[in-house]
Length: 113
Image (tube, rainbow, N blue to C red; front, side, top):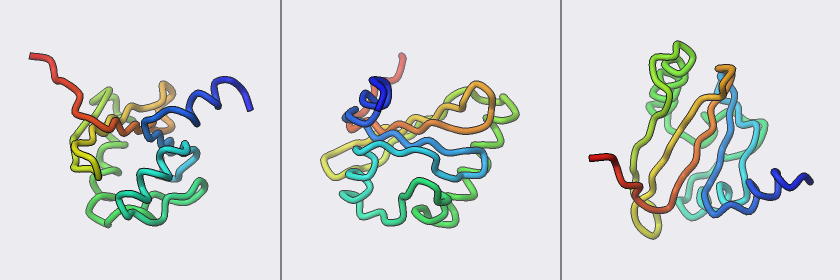
């Protein structure tokens, strides 16, 4: 395992990478732990995100991924309640437009004034 892979695997923020078709291509250890704490079943590398999200969420994700592909937006974030308080979910596209990296920070990230 490379040092970069160790860094992502040991980061205390959940990281989920998916391709433009919503297939999970990578998830770090914290992602699996957090999904378990949130009682979200179905996160698995190689599986579609539809396995762990509600249908209405999949519709929203497809719209978001299309906005990324069309270069209408460069980043998307939202907050949600987690097991120990606010989670901030930040999604950014790959530079080649073929996928998205989603990071879940276990706190609220300050927004610019």
